[in-house]
Length: 355
Image (tube, rainbow, N blue to C red):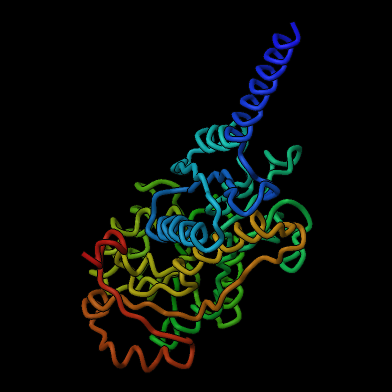
C-alpha cells in the first residue's frame, strides 16, 4: 500500500514537471526577464502609402536595418508589411489588421498613413513611428519636434522650399514665370507650396499653378505648364506627382522646362533636379528609432523627431543635356546653395541603376 502511494506521488510530480516544461518552451519572451538565452521578439506593422521610388527606398532600408539590429541586439522582429496604394479604405483595413495582430509598434510611411495610425491608436496607445512626414507639427502628429507628447514620433523629410527657389534662380536669373505643380490633397505639399508662393511674390515673379490628383490630371497639368510658357516648374515632396513623373518628364524636357523637385526620386524618374534628404538614411534612422522604443524602452512622447540635412541636390544628367545645359556650369551655379551635388540618370527605381 505504502509503495503504491509513493509511486502515485512520483508519477504526479513527473506529470507536473512535464507541464511546466512545455509551458516554458511555448512562451514568448518580450520582457527580457527569461535570462540571457531567451530571445526577445517583437511584432511590427509597416504600411507604405504608395509605390514610389523614395518611399520604397525607405521601406527597404527600414527592413534591412532591422535585420542588422536583430544580430546586434540578439532580438527578433516579425515584420508585417503592406502598401495601401493611396486608397483610404485599404489603409484603414491594413491598420485595423495590425491592431488585430497585436503588433508591438506600427510604422507609417508618409503623412496620410501616419495620421490614420495616430487616430486608430488613441485608445490602445500602440507606439507609432512615422517616416517621410514633411511637417509633423503642422499635421498635428506631434506637439513639437523636440517633445512629441504622445505615442507618435518618427523621422521627417522636411523640405526647405526657399532653397529650391534659390536653385531655380541660380540656374536662370532671368526667370519671370514659375509653375507650381502639386496635388492639393497632399498634406506634404501644403507648407512648401505656401513658402514658394511667398518667395516668388516677394521677388515679383509671376506664379502659375496647376494641380492634379490622378495620373491623367497630372499629365494635363504638365501640358498646361508648357502652354503657359513657364520658365521652370517646382514640385515639393508630393507623392501624387512622384507617381506620375515617368509619364510627364519628357513633356517638360522637350519644351525646355526644367522641373525642380523635393526628392532625388523625382530626378531618378526624369525631373531635372531633386533636392532634399537622403531617403535611404531616413529608412535607417527610422529603424533605429523603432529599436530604441522596443528594445531600449524609449518613450515616444519624449523621443524627439529626427530631422536631417536636406541640402543635397541630385541632377539628372540626361535631362540636363536635353535641356541644353552644360553640367559643369550648372554645378558651379548650384554649389553656393547646396551641401552636396549628386548625379543620376533616368530609371524606374534605384535598384535599376545597380543592375
